[in-house]
Image 1 (cartoon, rainbow, N blue to C red):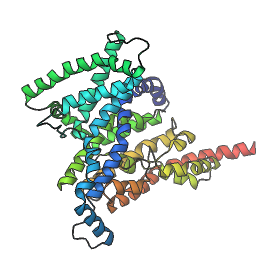
Image 2 (cartoon, one colour):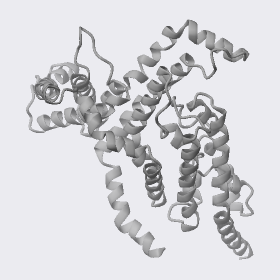
Image 3 (cartoon, rainbow, N blue to C red):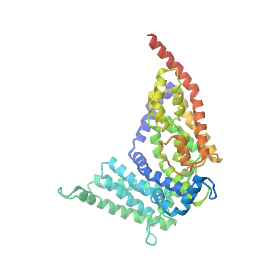
Image 4 (cartoon, rainbow, N blue to C red):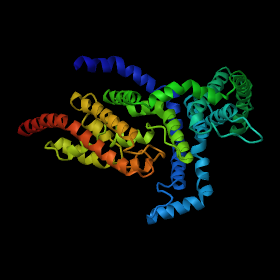
Length: 427
């Protein structure tokens, strides 16, 4: 164990910390966080338009909901079409903004340039209108690539002072617009011919070609081995003292968007939902209570004989209900603590396995909406699955199992701390 901890500290942590701080990964994470409010509101409106009740329900609430959705469907679905259905627009602009800001370039210019590049690749006009087929989750990879390319092009030009510089007396907003003129021209001159060439030689648009390239990876992530690898990596990073959820979550962002968008499209079409691994699946089954599925551990702390652990439990209880667990991770501590680090990694992996099989055989619904990750797990899981009662039951099962996994390690650690507290009191 000492050799393993030494390897983590000297070899593993520096590399992963460098990756986690890499500006493109950070910008991608910021882009999806920026788009999240639109995705949440769009998801809510989709649920209103597609109630979780059969058309012939006799339930009073269900009957009223079905009547509302039937009579006002065209009105209810519009906010979804203007948010979730075009999420890639928001993601592209947000990534461009964040990446430009990290380079100390004009962030507004970076956002607008990224958006224009994305639209040029994914939504060339057809019969006077912009097609929206690849503005949802299917266009996410295109949005990311367009943002990276656009901002890097702008940075390349600015570093070499290839720009139209206005006199000092010109207002900053006007000067910034002229600064962006050459990047916009070159972006169009490069991407538009490239888009035409791709369509000519492949017969498909750029986002369709990119999705085809990423199809094996998209399929691999939504499998139990893919999920377990992501869970293991995130929690190993946490154990090493690095915010694993932030790093792994940033990488998983495009996949979450693709899977949720596909599930929503299937729901609207009356088809079976294709994907299991959505962001709510991670938040409310795998890591209920926060990374490491520590909600059960906090409950154990509240009953502890150790004054230290009981105090931590009291402080951490309310945040844990809302899936925030930095207090318990750093106060216990779990970081670099082998006694609690082992169940911290194992418990979420077991939860992932249970939830994957339960969802796969239909005991719990698949995600069709994205509640805020701070929603208490039972409510969030039901909300995400269009109020399936099986989701509530699955959360309880995962909570019981994760608590049982923590229990023997908790007792060992508690015994150690109680002994130390008694020795300190005697001294």
